[in-house]
Image (cartoon, rainbow, N blue to C red):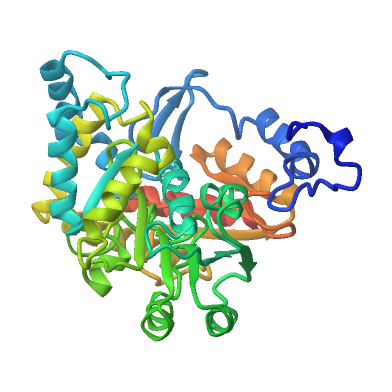
Length: 416
């Protein structure tokens, strides 16, 4: 009998859609996606995509309030030059072989620089999603935390790249999803289970910050394992842009694991896993990730140009220069908050969300803004819960006072 011989298993019931339901999500959201494309709010092709001042192939100039380069480093000449220099030196874009077999000195040097910045072991991958693909099953297996699989607890609003891993994680450990930022429910699970791991973002893609002090208090009290996505806080927060966790709680221990994007505020390319050096598991965890970490074991690494860009951006971060950009970003956010009231006002983060509830109203508002020269993300289910549709706005350090004022006027008119 083979595992696919369903006739031999007459009483077996296949459980479907336990962790996702793509068909249902598509049925509910496709009408709004279709209209967004029809209205020119999605699937836009641009001739110029650098920065936030962009030009579409229809020769329409827009100010894009939906880019993730919060510090404006995506247009930094030094980072681009670093990418080109690496290409010229290596004379190839990539080498298609697992890094565990053969890899370049450039990869070692790049990760060593990141290790200095984060005071940790850092492993680079092609994206933050690949980092999640690598890290979550490893933690779920218990391989990085003493051998016992923990109960894997996901925050309901954890980013899609985290939630998408539930099925794979469930092959290693039990999986539970709890309400957003529900520390009380998480503590109850810690009290009733010997090993618990919590999966969440530190800064959520639609705004807001995780209750980090409470989470680390649970770690101190119960040994809670934390797996935190720093994609929207790396570069934006912390001394030298090290993010929310390391800046506030110091070097990582054996029970805290970070993943992040090097393609957002960092201004370069790819993603990374950040593993603590402290404790007996430090180097061992790095080796385990390299040997058994899915995408890390394949030939899907950051390419040569990306490594050159990461290395240059790392040096900019180490110099402290990003702290000047962070202050400018806070000034931009404060100016916006003085003009437009949102629940996130004053939180020190660059993401704002204007809730309009209805999908049709959200698309109408985004279309009006686009007509005025401003592009925003019309966000609806499944990106956000049903009945919570709205406009997601990304602020950048390189936005002028005049642009913020003009955008605020258009936004007020479009949502009134």
